[in-house]
Structures are given as structure tokens and as C-alpha cells.
Length: 297
Image (cartoon, rainbow, N blue to C red):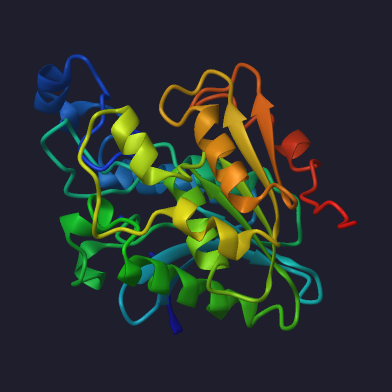
């Protein structure tokens, strides 16, 4: 693992095929290049603006599989490390056409990280997001569609967490994942012994259930977070669900809670929040909800 230097919403939807994003998809696609915020450059500039205001510095981290983009602020190496994981990004342009660049337009995971005042904050983009494709020869459409939670993806993300954890030696890691990043957070936590807590925001914690809910194809080449619920059952966790989220409804978090046994997991349903809205402004207050485990009898 090495750092290789700095520096490139249509829909952030979790399901295995394309999302139900925009009713006028044909018209939208025809003018995509002309719309503000739609080019990779504009998405990059938006991310840099979010990060710069929070003193998060861009880095590229070579995991050996993918070159991942991170935004980093580590100012107290003897304090815990908080790692944010982005959602699925611009994975699909329509129900049948995948994107050629999964970089998110809004980068909600990064916006949450930018609202966090903790001394040690790392934001990790998912493979092929933000990083120029020329730096990422292994990038391909499967890694943001059917293999988005595949073994290579999770290993790469976990290696990046290890890289930054080495900068805060001996300190616990706190994982926070938005949407599909919630699944990645669980899958990473299942591999590690230094994770003190998991927080998910609109987290896709039961991919098979969500895909069936939206009548789209399963993803057999991806791992499903709920299958690893028992392996993270002793990690303190809070799963935030939007009361108005029709993409990943609160029932998804409830299913995951039941699968963990519920001793260390809780659900917090946020009124007025949907899948993509209502989170950023509330985030500093929601961070005050500290994940804990109930004492055993």
C-alpha cells in the first residue's frame, strides 16, 4: 500500500441493475454533457470544494488492485480514526445503461465527512470514483455494477483502511458508510479486529432483499452484508434510516438488526430524511448518538 499523490448524483442507487432515476431519461442523456455538475471535472471540483472547507486533503492510495481516492485529515495520531465510505455513486445512467464513470455527483459520504469535527477523519471513495481511469487500468464497469461488493473491492478498501490506521497506531477505527458504503463498512469490519464502531446512513445492509424489493437482478459476484451480521454482532453500531427513504427503507436496517442479535446494534429513524436528502445538515447532531453495546446479564 502506498500513497501516490493528489488528483478527475445522477443516481446513487444500490440495486444490482439500473435504478429508477429520472423519468425523462432519454432526454436527460441527450443533454448530459451540457448539464451543470455532470462532467467528471465538475464532480471533482465539487468534491475539492467540500473537502477544502473541512481541511481534508486529497490523496491517491495504491492498494495494489485499485488506486483509490481519499480525502484525509489526521491531526491527533493518538486519537481514534474515523473512516467514511462513499455510496455507489453514478453507477447507472438508465435501467439498462451503466455509467462509464461511477464518480458521484453529490458525494454525500464526503459531505458527511466534511461535517465531522473529529481530529482524524478519512474519506474513502469507492474503486474507480474520482481517480482518473488512466491511473486505474483494472477499473471496469463490473466493479461499480454487479461486482461492487466483490472480494477484490472489499480487499482493496480494507487495505486502504489499514494504510490510514497505521498513521494512528493502536487506535480504534470507527467506520461510517453511506448507502452502498454501509455494506462496505460491514464487510470491512468483518475482516478486522480494530473496529470499535459502525455507523451506516441509508445503508444497503441486505442487498438481496433490496434487489428483490425493486425487482432487479441479483448480484452473485458480490457479498451481501447481512450474511456477515453475526461476524460483526459484537461491534457497537447505529444504523440511520430515513423515514421517507423508498430506496433503502427502514425495514432493511431492521432485518440487519435482527440478524446481529441486537445486543450491540440499534436503529435510528430520521424523520423527513429520504435516501439522498436530509442527512448532511443533521449529521453533527446524529454523530452525538454514540454506538454502544448492552451489558450482558
